[in-house]
Length: 319
Image 1 (spheres, rainbow, N blue to C red):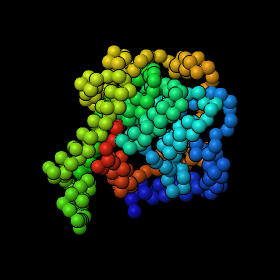
Image 2: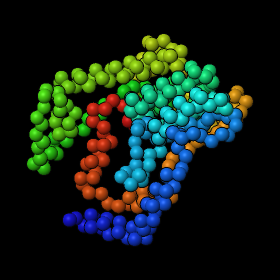
Image 3: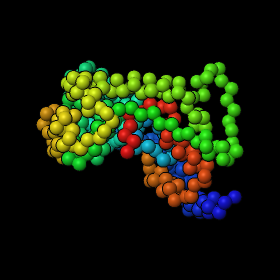
């Protein structure tokens, strides 16, 4: 066993001794009784909903103990939007974005939920772009009637990416080889220890092209632009707020508080904030401990593979 692994085990034992299992217990209890969007929201009178789309747009959960919760909670967010359709006290939705995007599926699912809400209720949706609102974040924002961006935001990155990590060279050095018994030549495509064939590259490209065409159509509808103009802008590049404004990708540049105030005047009601996070102080403590623990070579490789999302089309800014 390597020294850094021994050191990590010692640190873990010490931390568990200090915090004890009570931390896990109270975290579970607090999480059990915390409000989530799948439950009935408390009555707060007429208001508009402020929904944060912060972090990677994907359906993710914490670890086996329920710790290390993601900042974006997809199912809760979609469910909440769907519930707002039937809430007569709700007068609109204000979206706050700080995201580089995420999965094609999840981005489209939230977009469709917002469009259904708007079509069913006729209520307004505004979007505010924080530090980053790119790719899948911009896709979702196409459901908004009005988009305001911070003057320092990074936006755009309209496009699709499928990443693929080829570790076949590393496997060869380590003397490892995976044997695949498949029903067809392309059944194992995307395996990180196998190089892609030309046919498989073409297959992936067809998936990217289809998702890209969908993205272009969404922007055309959301911004009222013709397809040729959108395709000219949608080469994957990022835009500053001023560049986005000049190209018709947003409606205004301003600060968050003023945008909230303007939306409040439009709807005639005040904001209602909903936090979908189920994290507790114990989550934060254990997450901080995990960050300082040394990682084994296997852990590093596993995290690399997870980040790469081999073969999954993504509306995500790779920067």
